[in-house]
Length: 96
Image 1: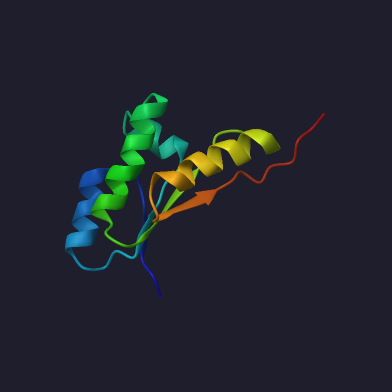
Image 2: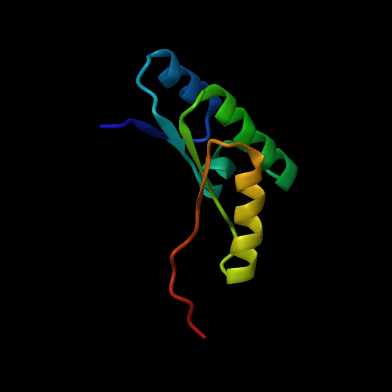
């Protein structure tokens, strides 16, 4: 079993890591917004900060785009941030 904390709160991530039970972090744009993280550069930096706390654990980062090209572009940018990043994509049905 692996323990992933679902948050963008750095203090909560540190606490879980310090307890020795953290295998990774899963987060998304709504959790970033809940923590007041706004603006592309701040969000990207926050993902790197999470990776540095979660030392070696997977850190999920979700794209915001819903179109194929946008998801690929954002996913590549997120994956390039840090080796621990695992990119999540939204799986929604588009209605035309």
